[in-house]
Each structure stands twice: as structure tokens, then as C-alpha cells.
Image 1 (cartoon, rainbow, N blue to C red):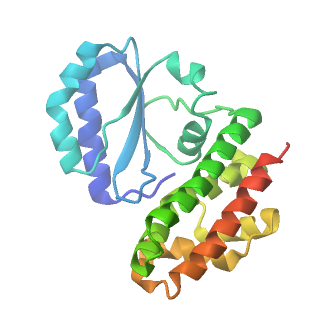
Image 2 (tube, one colour):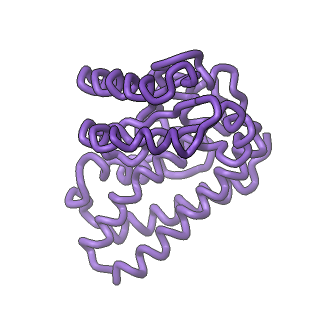
Length: 241
């Protein structure tokens, strides 16, 4: 279960009451989960009966207040859309299922099983996209030290999400359910499973909290980072259950 602060819990309860006002008994379930972009915002998924454009219009007066309280606009799905889109958004649903708080109704993610084949395919796309982004960003940085350091720091949420998804893929959801995977565990998994230096992973992930200015040799770290990303993609490309 995510560790929300007292103020976040208060904001979430106010947010849930807003959705109660809009949907009433048609709000079948509402869950909250941490954002993946490191901006401190809280995300949510609302399952409702017969979602209409009129429902969206009724939500408009509340959105400014949600943003002020660092609550992102909710992912809204009709009851049949969650199971029908499981193959399209396997990573997103697996991440929510692993770490969420039920605010209203029954838990829509209880017993949810993401097919391993869908998870592997999506994780491979994520890994390859991450690698391509690093290569392109380096060229766009013109090799300037400060810009290279910034691109490393900016990439850490994506790397953390990628490694978390890999952990769920190779170790199964039971090992990560209702728990946040810490950076040391992710670095250890990358070393054990993919032969990636845990020091590289730790140094990159630390940039999200320590800041880009703490990277002593950005170009050297990026070279190791790109090599590690190549290993990660190669691993998931050849992974079989």
C-alpha cells in the first residue's frame, strides 16, 4: 500500500467526495496510487458505469482544485474497459495493481492477472524506447557536461519504472505486490538478472534525489548507462517465462 502523507489523504478524501457528487452510485470503484514522474502528484483510477461526455463536463469545475492539491485528473474507465484494455496497457495496470489504495468500492485490481506475454512485449518496447531516448538526448546535448548531467537526472523516473516492470516480469507480481521496490533492490536485480553493474544503476537513480550537479563525470556515467541500457533491452528481448 502506498505511503501517502496526512495532507495527501485529506486531499484524496476531498477528491473522492467530488467524484461521489458527479457519479453517485455509478462510481463503482476508486483507487489512488503514486505518480511515476517524481513530481509528488497522486494519481487515481475511477471505475464507473456508462461513462459519458456529460460526466466529464460535470468534473470540469473540480479540476483546478485537484491540481492545487497535487491530485492528477483521474484515469476514468467504464466497468468493461479495464479487462478489455489489459493487453494494451499491461505495464500501467501492473504498476497500479502492485501499489494502490482503495478509496471507494471493491478493489478492481484484486485478482487481476496481466499475461506474461503482454507484459514482456510492453517492457521490451519500454526498454528499447529508453535506450533510443538516451542516444538521441546525448546527441542533442552536444556533449556539454551540464546538459549531459541534466539528461541523466531527467531520465531516472523512466529507468526506475523500467526496472520495476522488469522485476514484476521476471520475479512475478507476488514479490512486489503492495510494496515499493527500493533502488538498492532494483540495482541488485539488474546485476543478478542482467549482469549490469549495480553501481551504475545506483549512481543514475541517485541523480533524481541528489541532483545533476552531484554527478562528477557525466559523460563517463552516461557511457556506462547506455551500455547498461543495451544489456537491459537485450535481456528482455530474449526473456521467456
